[in-house]
Length: 327
Image (cartoon, rainbow, N blue to C red; front, side):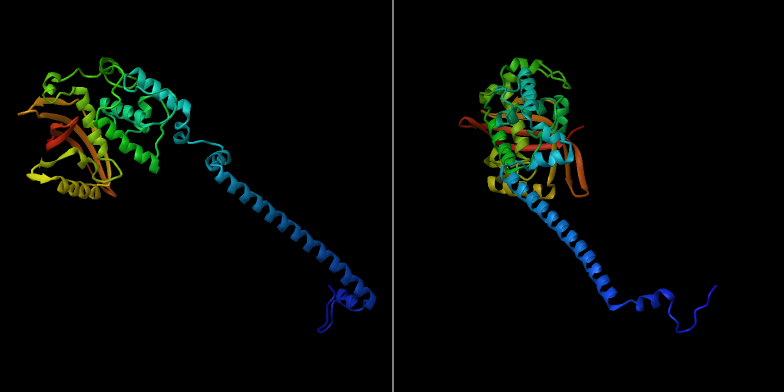
């Protein structure tokens, strides 16, 4: 191998230094052309990327204005969730028809989610031991062989308030109470017969109306307006083991309860029983299952809850409430 002496440049380097000034100018010019070509290519590529981004944002802006944001996302992912498809008119119509066939719903089969439909869902849930939500939740949709449609939007939460108020007053009663008592839908148990219906005549209401009242009371306990179920109570009430309490004190207690257990679920674990009380009062007892949660803290069980009701104009109000652990 040929040795290179110290200080002696390689042959290629010597040849480069030996190039004439004219050759060097030509090489620099060629290098400038190549550099400019690459630089122009980069500028064009960056420019196209910016234009594409601007058009994407422009399209996104107008899509949001047209209310098309969710469909665009669905097309991008290539899939639609069960909750999204649950709100489709054909799914809601299926639920409406099944509830009407069972005597729970008397509205139009129009595919629209309304407070009438929410009230019918609450009746169905109450009758079949499902969590009382007034919504087409996962458990209820499974029983009805439909897709769930649950939302926590402000409009939906307002509808929940309308639902329990409607049930409380006995509005939109079922199409045929006899059919509702005897007909079972997919995944349901046979309804129980009227219990002590004649005893409820003391307040001139039917047992079915009292069932709606109980369902409304339970649903009000889930209202986003904390303490909403206080509207069911009279001005002064025999309140559990705390003695007689005012309406406002009861509301404060309900708010403390909701703060202690912000996540709550309730089921009616059976039918109501009705017994006459002194005067024009009536005692209504019903088994209630519950699941309460706050973070990692949980509580669950079953109680027998008792409401003593008396007429208040065309409505009913609670004058006493108590509960005991169910056996």
